[in-house]
Image (cartoon, rainbow, N blue to C red):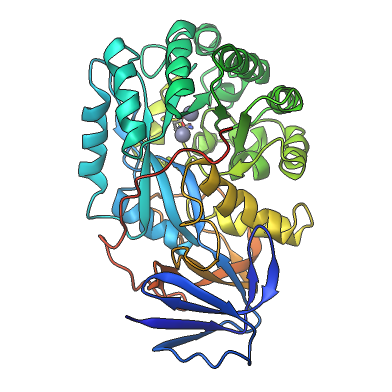
Length: 463
Ligand code: URP
Ligand code: ZN
Ligand code: ZN
């Protein structure tokens, strides 16, 4: 059994910051010890002096190879999980998709076929329900039992992923009974589609109109409706990719009432804005995602929500499409631009930059990027912390290294960076997944197939 010892670093978890040596045995954290006192020996010693020793990131919102808008997200499970590791993320939870007329099982099988044997880090699945029927409602119970314990529903994208309020209510009733978590894409898609049609009729075809028609109030209205439907059924609710200040207010109000309502935002909403969507020469298409980027003024509410715990998780919604050949499908009609942005490699660094800038503390960084996502989706204990018995998913992070984000140097399979030219302080140096090196002093030494499928428990935030 290989023993690894990480010495001299500052171990940061959501709960503590302590100078400790970390002993890893058989892929798990064996012990934390006071440096210079324990006398441990090991096959491999990693010097982490002047570095942070943090749990591997847990990104609970990715879309590798997602079919969307007549094309596919450009990262495969192989390329996307390698890029995640480069950025200090050691667990992803991706979305398997139920197509219309298909069973949940068929969708799940299809995603296993894409991912199994290809991932460099551990992975699990949520289930996108695009066809809420008697059959799929029954299937939800089986999925929860076997480790797919969360279900994404869409109030947006009529004719594709959309569910009406009756379908949403039924799925929530089922989740309330079986311990599942309902994840909601909260935008009023019916109203948005009218505004899209009207904008196009006026000749408003540029990417920036994507942001104008997908109004903040229509995100807030859908968020409110989702909360009320969840309240009626007693189901917990996790609202994904929250971007509008008014939606944060809806979540805050519900939480003040004591409802089991949770919210996630993403780095693109914290660091980018409608200014990017308005970039000339169709460059704004790089920033088309839904919910859309908002005017800069919304960012303060998102940061505040992260500090006050009205928002609990930052994940990426990583859904990359190349500018050339994919985003270009929407030249002359913004509604045909595939929705989604790359970011799985950037999240831990961008959030560390927020630490550097004094927006969040170091422990809150780990809480929103590692511990809470693991707790929220039934992975905590194994993932999201550094403690005896946990999987040895550990990142040696250099808080002093300087880097410039760029498509030239990133590892995501996409031809642009949403953060091109952005300077940040801090960089991943070494990454272990279950005690095996994946990144060793900024060299990829992992392998496709190392990543294991994670059958998840139910959320630790359920009553
Ligand atoms: O624009 C986005 N977010 N694309 C991915 C699909 C989704 O709604 O999460
Ligand atoms: Zn969504
Ligand atoms: Zn998504």
